[in-house]
Length: 152
Image (cartoon, rainbow, N blue to C red):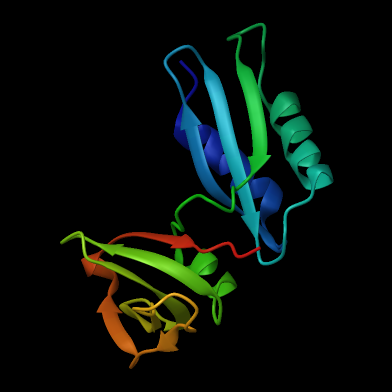
């Protein structure tokens, strides 16, 4: 079986010094490698192709066959690390705490320990605009999941 840590090292090596980073990596029992890239800006298909070709050339199919998928990290997927949090500063996010409390609002700040969100209070009557609540500070250890909120 292909080693997940080896794949992570290769991807990190390829992306070192760029605005892109490894968001997630998974290797299944049947050697399907799934790599998701993210960046300080959007990830292009060209960047995914570069990483895919680098991985293809770094692995030996004769030694161990594999399936490879390199994608950009989806906008509907949970944020996993500090770099992703910073990308969504001053943007709406949906937070679920470990106690299953849900909070939606604008991500105001984040550091290694905590983040600050200005919650949106939904109106009680139809047709009214939502109001902004008082900023809330949450410890990162209290958070189960953070997802960006996409508005169209």
